[in-house]
Image (tube, rainbow, N blue to C red; front, top):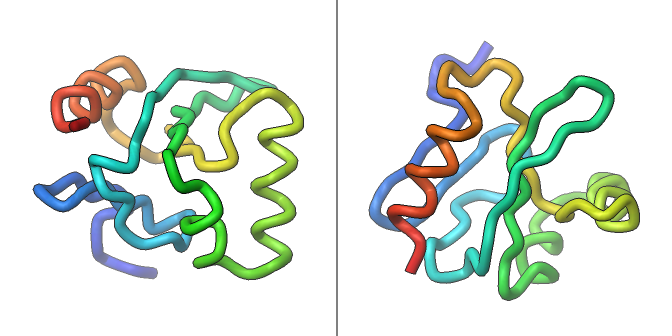
Length: 99
């Protein structure tokens, strides 16, 4: 088990180690919204250069993430399961850093 925090917000951007995309720069995040599907709460990250971030993951994972988009969500999401913050609080923290 990885002892590092799953979600990191710093001066460069945010990194959710679950998605394998590395750091998503603050200036690349165009907007965010919350979502829920089958009881799972998540935050949608709508980025300006989505293909650049999707190119960082395997083809299989990319296809899975693109299914989110077909369902009306962003391809890039932060699942709130296992995160000690509430979605509203995390969204406030993200919005405070977006450029």
